[in-house]
Image (cartoon, rainbow, N blue to C red):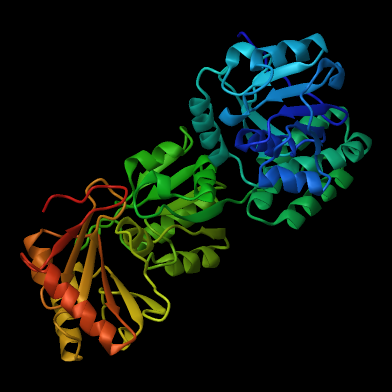
Amino acid sequence: MKTFPLFVKMSERRVVVIGGGGQAAAKVRLMLKTEASIAVVSDRLDPELQGLVLSGRIGQHREAISANCLQPGDIVIIARDGDERGGPSDFEIAEMARSAGALVNAVDQPDLCDFFIPSIVDRDPVVVAVGSEGNAPLLARQIKSRIETTLEPRLGELAALAGRLRPRVAEKIAPRARRAFWNWVFNGAPRQSHAKGAERDAADAIKQAIERGGAPTEKVDGGFVSLVGAGPGSRDLITLRAVQRLQEADIIFYDRLIDPDLLELARRDSERVYVGKTPGAHAWPQERINGVIASAAKQGKRVVRLKCGDPGIFGRAAEEIACLDAAGVAWEIVPGVTAASAGAAAAGQSLTERGITDTLVLTTGRKRDGVCGVDWNEHLKPGTTMAIYMGVGEAREIRKHLLNGGHPKALRVDVMSCVGMRNQRLIQTCLGEFPDVMEAKNIAGPAIIVLRNPERVGLLQEASRTANAVGMENGCKVAASSRLPAEAL
């Protein structure tokens, strides 16, 4: 290593930033996270820096910097934009600062630097710094982003609580028992509760354990189930909380639509169990899935039930929750990006538009045995966007039902297949032809069928003309995804 990472106390230190433009503002913004006093050296400041000066949060020196302005221990950051390069050169400023006993950093000039500003994962007081000695700052930022996904946003609050309680721990818990106590705090029930947002429960449990003289000796974790939404497919659409649950899990039960790359986010030693169900061939019936996740949790395991999309939207989460409640197993729902939202985003569309479609209905094309079918006409009232999940097999019945209800054949229909996956397809067609188009294009699912019924008749007529205009061949238009290219159909 040419440099050694250190954490420097900033409470009585001064940071001097040379420059008044965008680069200087970015460095000041970072230093404001510390307890250092901050001064900028420039006669012209951008609006952000002007506001900070007026509020008294930073100081300003209008004259050119000199060695007399600096003192040993100062940190000098040279961050001048291109139009601020008059006067002494950056090299001369750096030499002047060193002669005064200051440490120097110059933006994008590693040869002038005594130290480098790393990419920072901030969970104050927990801080992770990633540096590349100025060689690859973009790579450092990428690594930082990955670390961000592994640490819960409120972790710093738990660390701060631990710091406040350390004197009491030293008083009440014998030295030989302290390691086990802190291991329980940061790897056991307190951290799990804190990560779920139950900060008060976590704090109460820690304080009670301190008064008892140590961590609980009985088994405190009876297992826990997280019903986790994986998003529509792509691993970059999963939430931060979902990644955290994957990295905490002892066992993961996952569906057939889960991207295998997404499972790489999980702990390497976690057990992975495929419980996928293929339409018409249910190798894993729902009752069996309910049983195995409850059984694993009752063995004391941290369980993730990983579902495509959002667990609470046609994910049969209610049945799994009922089973877990009956078994006395604690659970949570970790929401995910649902396919209708992801599909509309990929197509560059909004699911709602003020004054045109103010209502959004998420419904299903799949009927449960013994239950009456869905009334799609009732859902598709004027001013409504209707997204139909699991509608591929019912496409012809959906068309018949809506046409019989008086909806025009030219009403626009968007079919969004395999949203967020490598084989994503986005097709624009119309009500009269969409089942035939889906069959011709081998759309076998998973797919979302989206229909819009505008609020005003004139808009409905315009939508009909648009649908007719684009239905030049096979009644469909293929839309390109903003993130993934549409298949050339």
